[in-house]
Length: 78
Image (cartoon, rainbow, N blue to C red; front, side):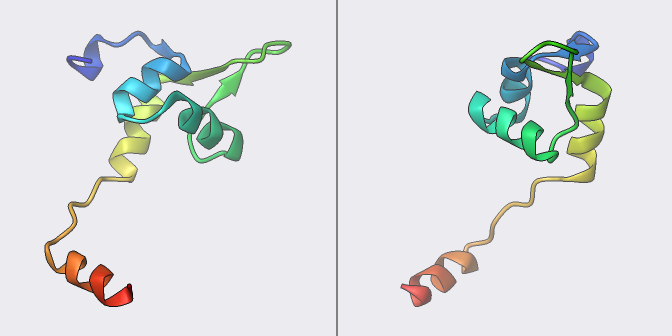
């Protein structure tokens, strides 16, 4: 997706997966577990996500780049 400001206010699991760079099944699993803010319409089976809440989730959980020293630690564990 180009820019998060171009997204609709309500997203489905596929749109969230695209935004987060994740698999759709993982997005659904995170929603079921409460790890992602999600809603189900009464009587419905699919999750819906509020775009602003997903953006806030991203801000609260920034990605951290791994360092080269991590590779040597992994090799020592093997």
